[in-house]
Amino acid sequence: MSAPSFHIIPPRPAPTNTGGLLAWLRPNLFGDWKTGAATLMLGGLLLWLIPQLLNWSLFSAVWIPDVKTCRAAEGTGACWGVIAEKYRVIIFGRYPFEQQWRPLVATLLMLAMLVASCMRSFWKPWLAGLWIAVLVVFFVLMYGNTLGLSKVETDRWGGLPLTILLSALSIVMAFPIALVVALGRRSDLPAIRVFCTIYVELIRGVPLISVLFMASFMFPLFMPEGLTINVLVRVLVGITLFSAAYLAEVIRGGLQAIPKGQIEAAATIGLSYWQTQRKIVLPQALAMVVPNIVNSFISIFKDTSLVSIVSLYELTGALDMGINADADWKPFKLQGYLFIALIYFIFCFSMSRYSQWVEKQVNKSKQR
Image (cartoon, rainbow, N blue to C red; front, side, top):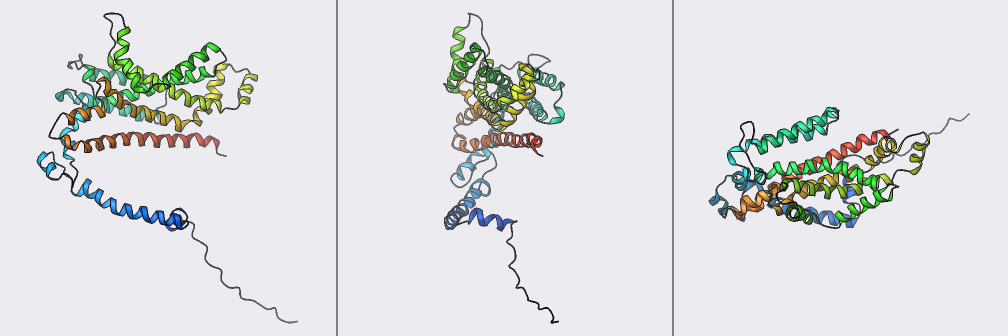
């Protein structure tokens, strides 16, 4: 019997690395010659632009609040000294200088409350009561006229505290209104459905500036003689109603995505309309539109910058008031706008990241 023969198999090439930086660069930045050429062009532009940007913003920048030094560096370096000089006006607006510790404490309390409300461990029945207590403390600190605090009228509130107040209260009040309006637009009762539809279409048909103008200047003309409503309250109501109309359409989109069979199944087991909405429809509908809801919240936060047209100087208005009124620092208002842009970015980015966390928590129920 002959011995079995053996054949040497040639070595196979090593498998392509599917992880790491190079594995990501090949398909994403150098997939073909067009993608590679665009990558090289953009890369070259960034290599030329980034050093100049760093030189202007950091290495050649002026950090001390000195006008002469800033003017000497104009065109070659940024003047961040304008922030050091005007930051209290930008942050607190026209609030009395010696009393600015009050809006600082009030804003920190409000921010702490917002952060706590985003944490699951604080989602308890007493959270609503805590919100009421914080709002009372906020208005006591800001307005004063009690507990030995001097009185500060609302028309002198401004800067970041006013932005936080308007955006937080508008979001909190707009969401339940939007929920009711969205359900109303899908109601079987014609009167309710028509009323909600008219409200949404009427509000969405005009810009927010028009709503604020009407709330601030036109609405008082229809009030009885001797009766006035604070401009801050009128503006807050205007922003809330405007935001609720847009948010209602977002929620209605989620409601329409729920299969009709689930509603019919709930009716067969004896659930009432509100039980069906609360236990079956709304949890699913709201989970579907979490990104759109947070996008609406971000829009509300940024839209507060429009209240300056009614002489309420929030963050953007306080910047214009503080820098444009000073001829020495007016040439450096670009750095001031970059400063408040950073503040807006921090808040909006935080809301965006929280939205992603909420989506992950919601999607856990769908994982098998």
